[in-house]
Length: 125
Length: 385
Image (tube, rainbow over all chains, first blue to last red):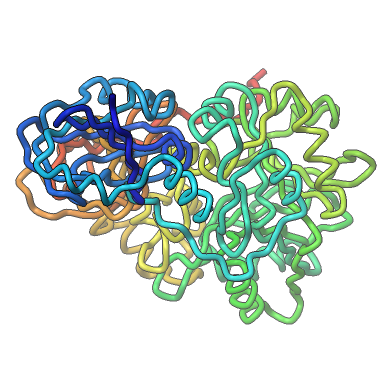
């Protein structure tokens, strides 16, 4: 079963085995507004936790998407280039950004679970 | 993900429509000292497209409205012509022009709309609409330079609404019969909900439409009357910005400021023939020189070839990699359905069709200089019969 964790930068990360799928949270997508451009990382790139590795732009502004954990990019969501609105429609589903092969699973312990993230959003509203 | 930069307000002011925006679910942001709606639940993209297709209602009550009052039109016009490069003397009663308040070096202190009072009773009055962020400085600047015979009165009990889009004329004519015949860039007084309002056929979206100056106390009732029409939706500052960018219109503090002249800004159309020849406005020597020989840099439209928007501040390179300028407004154009930008480039690279590069996140992206606007203006023109 997949474990879902969240970052303070509003990314979600769903882990199954040693593969993690990453995107931005529904809250983040709602805050951004209409997403008009997404840039995803190249497959094969090695990233470290906290590294900016994707870009999401709404009509209003551009924002970086950070790697929640370290690893190697094994897949990127190419569909988003042609249909960036998928991020608004299903931020935590088909609007995923990229998949990482974990290099250090213990980094997941630093991240929030859903309840903690919801509280974090509420506290920062 | 990094949050977009938030603007920290310091005791922001509110327009008379604040409560209605909040009740409508608007997201409020600090802008030019006011708490303004940046978007409603519809969202920027749909609000933009709605305005181009139907009609959008905008709260622009943060903008400054003032009157210059003098003994007759010629005297008041002459006083204002000492500060702006437009031909004000030639304005017919009710006629409106776009102009700029100029500094002594020809830099732009603000851009503004000037309307000659429509009726004989108030002849000698000019109505000025200036930018919110500049208004206090503008009033001080103008007052300090007016001759004794001319007085400036700030209309701070008036709110300004803009109704913009192809359905605007039909909508407003339901409440002000005949207003659909008002000429583009002219104004008139009209009764609306028992009040006298001042309506001009103008706006800042590239669409047909009106700006309506109403008493503060009636602003909410008039807003609700108009927004209650089926073609009308409330539109926030987010879509106002993308609409004016697609229309190729300058945003003060971004595309024009004290470092840019009207000629560099490609606004020479707003300086009429008599003023070009006679001068007599601040910075006239520089502006006449730039008109004759061409400016060293020019504001142009820029179309990125890919999908990535190039934001304000993006560096512009020539095809050979030489830095030639900076993007002053850029983003996603919903009607264009792609990225659009404008900025200043050296004069030799300003011809439409010139290939340039935009440095986005450290990488040069191909782009092209294009003619403005990105979306054709659809202003009201009376049929020639």
